Length: 291
Image (cartoon, rainbow, N blue to C red; front, side):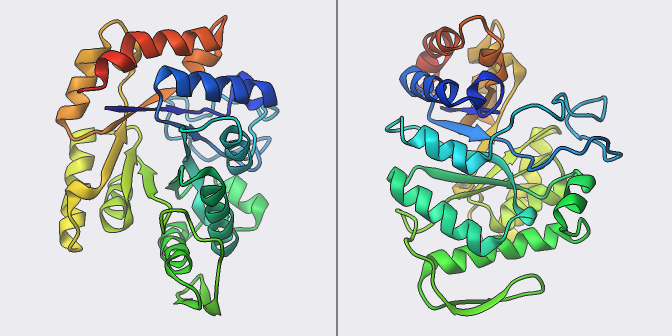
């Protein structure tokens, strides 16, 4: 079992030295990856419902520092050697896919092939409006952006034609170190599960019935002629950072999960975050390596 730290670019880890300390501590403790969150802007007020809290609101205040995920990961990459650098998630329909393909390929090349792209369609309508991106149709836009980026990574003189992206005879270089950047589809809905089965290298379900979502993902993969066993599953259970972590990890492994996501906030709120990361490595990661 592998372990990834999510919400890694928050709290004290958002600062330059905090990011360095966290990255080195995570790598030393046995974390395989760190995963960043993003919101380009925080609206002062919003009516959209945050899907991951019963209050319907984000816990973060508008003035909370939340560094750009890819620039923050570049900083961490420069101070680590093995740690994989992931977004979890990046709001794909808010990005220009050609610019993003170039940025990801560059970071992947510079870091020696350590980048993982976790994507989502977004939920905060007011943020889309501020950025001038249509909220409607963001799912179809996301699908096209995935296909367009892969076309750019797969070879020079690329072309792609869709409703939201249209180009021909263009090249992006450097290419990702291993040909492509793995793309993990995030989300807590059946729509996200179907997208993961159809397009994803991985699936990162949020809230929801994990077993049911995985069934939907696997059925979608088979429907599109893909092997569902080749789609990597990242998930979590609060029991993983509780008193009986190994039983929870074994249960996740039995469902096909190969990476456990652990919130960085449980370390960031500790009196000594670096020591808390090290303790988790000794207590949980090391015993769970063979699960």
